[in-house]
Image (cartoon, rainbow, N blue to C red; front, side):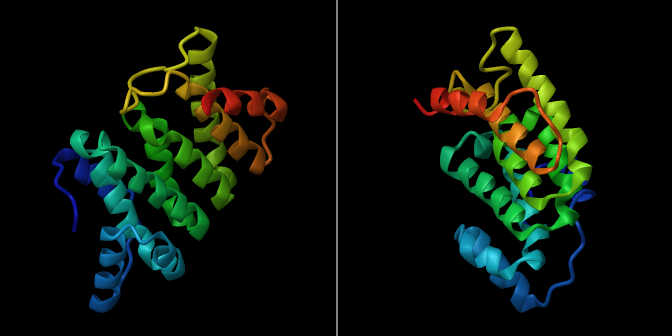
Length: 190
């Protein structure tokens, strides 16, 4: 449908759940994605998830698209939409994106969505990212590796808040208490 990438297509397409759609449904979903009509995608629900994942991977695998603030924001919002839809079929794709630093731009949205879906199978991936981001913080590197835009110097705080909140939603204790996360959030949104 949307893909322009090469080898990444095969890898990511294996993570996208299969969905049978009528031609009308498929066209309706494609138009909603093209228009970034998030309320419509949420109303459509699970049938929209595979096509949203295709678009997310297309954006994530294209350096030009992923560095475009508007397009990248659309991908983050599609990720959040999947969290609201609570489609557990999306877990492998969302975890894959979360764990690979190539897609670090999307980590806060991915952590949030995984917490919203509420499947404890996401704990391992969330803990891995949580520990990785804490490592950047411990080294005094509040930016970590390049994550796309290169704008926020305290991006790690944002990822920590999102992953810690998701982990707690899934019943996993973290060592950054909510009051400390609130301090991080204030620092991030200065």
